[in-house]
Image (tube, rainbow, N blue to C red; front, side, top):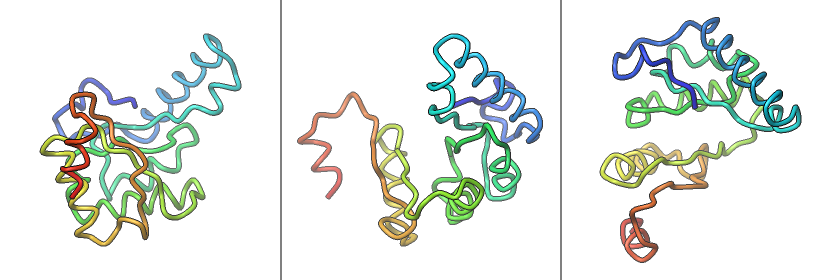
Length: 143
């Protein structure tokens, strides 16, 4: 995921043009440094304060493949973000998402998906990245 340094923790979002320019440069670098095939297949996400208002325009950018959603993932507007990227990229439903970490906030995101009726209908959680939790404790947390 790419997030402009100046956007971290500010709530400020890059313009679609700024985000596209940077994502295209990242994809170009991958094509030159690794291979064009990998550059085409890799998913580059935008992580700078994506929300329901800016998601449709950012989703329309050809090199933005998704979002690393922060605080908005705990709000009802998360469904609008998912819908925007799904529509722009013709993604099948349910959309596959991953949760980065399963501490307090990761569990809150998972609970919000359940509470909003999204899990299994509009969203499938296909991965949870949490290197500090063993499988037995993770299974306990999922109950």
